[in-house]
Length: 193
Image 1: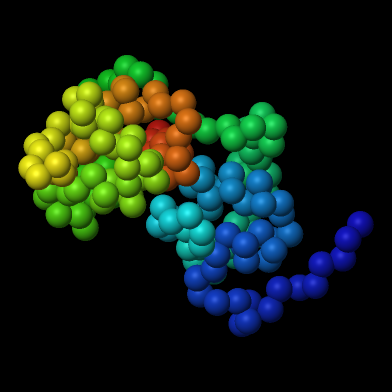
Image 2: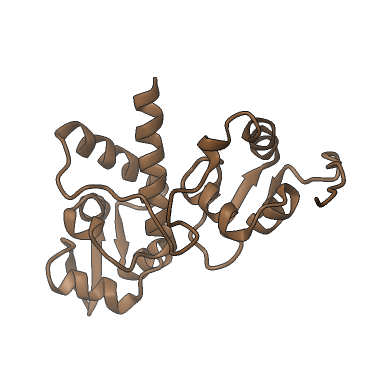
């Protein structure tokens, strides 16, 4: 059995990265990724390629305190370690769930302008510019074009994020997986109330 030094919480910054998180908690990278992507351990996700997770020290402490009491709550689902298992949102949603999904994405994009460029969507979602342009060209995202640029009203982008087409993409980006899992976790929390 490995001996782990007690954590000196005074030396731990108020906000840490995923790398610091798994080292402090003595868990694997894959377990850390599950805890953050699923929303079980709260975090802020930036969508960047590196250092994209910001975790509050308080949330790490809460996780360490309660994981011994409720290990089943923190356990990754069957198949997680074999593949990148993710929560999914079914193709057909109830009216109530659809409204909540719209509200979720609306809140997520609250800092964005009313009209965004395809390049903004690339930075946000992690999908390639050619993919975004393809979605616009095929009519999946409602937009208007000017000077060979796609202008996407935010309301139409949110509508696209809530569409069965977007939810059923097989090869999802990290941002896409994160948002689906985060929404799934929020719905589960609501059901427990």
